[in-house]
Amino acid sequence: MGVTRREFLRHSGATGLSLCLGQLAFLDAPKAGAQPAPGPRAEASPLPRYESWKDLYREKLAWDRVVKGTHHVNCWYQRGCTFNVFVKDGMVMREEQAATYPQTNA
Image (cartoon, rainbow, N blue to C red; front, side, top):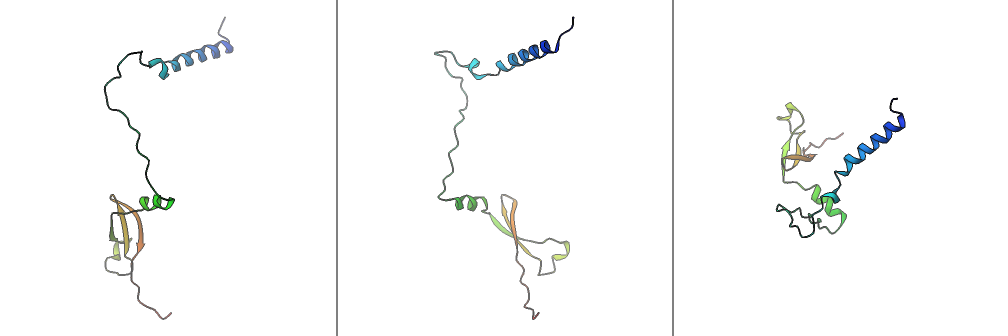
């Protein structure tokens, strides 16, 4: 006679459970009096210090330098499309338009 559905599920569950038991940490616990294995210790990183929530944003949005940039290929001769590009660790954090526009009477 073949394997019933119920027996198949029972055996599958038992097999899965036995495979999971080998991964539990309490099975690998050191014996009493055993020396710990030498190696680097993982130390907890210290929590960041800040006075208020604003300090988190100031640190996140801080930049290393400000460079000039444009958005178009033909902007090199125009003075109206320059941007201040704020860079941190070689990545652009933000940009602001830095052009000086002439006064118009419109």
